Length: 471
Image 1: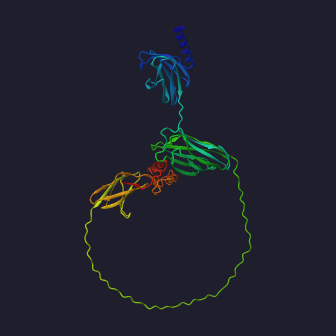
Image 2: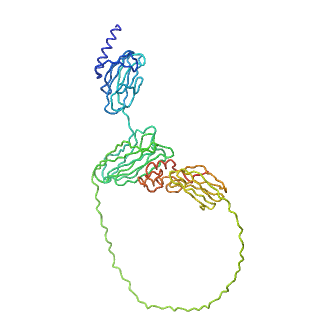
Image 3: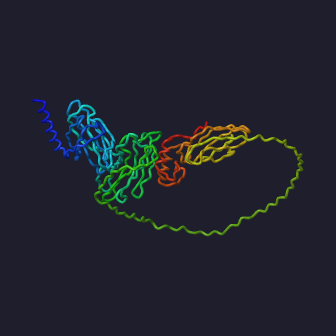
């Protein structure tokens, strides 16, 4: 078959497929974005996932127009039919200004508006197939699944709470607020899994009035980087009905900003009627009539009172004579000064103690943590404390008339109960005081509210003990 005949067949096929692809009649216009002498054929994209047929070379380019009524994440793919053809795709806004470009395909996210994709050869030229597809993104979310989904009164189900589509950067902490109908079910046995790493710090606000809170933070740098189960809890049916059990979440990726994620809940259907217990009256014991003991009357017996007479003894009065001794006059040594800086988000107190652990002097550090103490020359123990933090302790030698400077130290946050260890008992205090401001020691970031951000600070120092060594 002659080459001229083949070209004619390709043109016919192009016209037929273009009609099937939903293209509008083509209009010619000039374009200076690439080849100034190339003619641009304007065409329309009307359908997602449809296949469009086109042809470009150094003299003919094609511009495909489309409109968005809302934001879309999309990909445009051009598949060459002709060998040696490498297509260039240029995304343009309504004014013809370039937004992005790609070779062979182009992926972009754009808001509602009018756009166009211009197809031209990067090299070669020829026929191609074009498709426009929307990229479906799986967004991070939390889901609550109850199994089984239907129980009888008195039976229990297990609710499983999972984080889905966790991004690569992960979450350093998460706060879950779970709700349910407290008249139909009761919650117990909340168990935290290891999605946030081994030994996470957890704070649980006990179920009350149909809700409870579970806050979790990865300890010592751990975080959730994969999807999976975060925790489970038991749900016991109290009476017939249906309740939605849902856990909503706020997550932090390390920037101290809590972000809400979409949530998916589950329904639990409860069948039957709770059994009614009939109390059984306890029998009244019957026994013999008690016998009264006879009462006897005895005349009182008077005891004689003895009289003892002791003659007074006179003690001699000694006479003592003291000779005053003059005390030598001593010249006091000049005091020494201790300075330094202690970093904490709470007010810091710095004190000097003598060898017998007696406080000699103390002062509250400045807002930036700097301090200055003055005491007689000697060797002391210096201790820095702050509410909710492990203390720091070291030695200090003060020399009269001179200044000694301790190195800067940062106190470790999390010792809420002030027992020199950061552990689950401190985390429990956060759970019991959640969304309040008391006790102040639990508000580790000093922002006026106790929540998962404080737990995350505690988790950074989880299992550490004090006092910290202050060199």
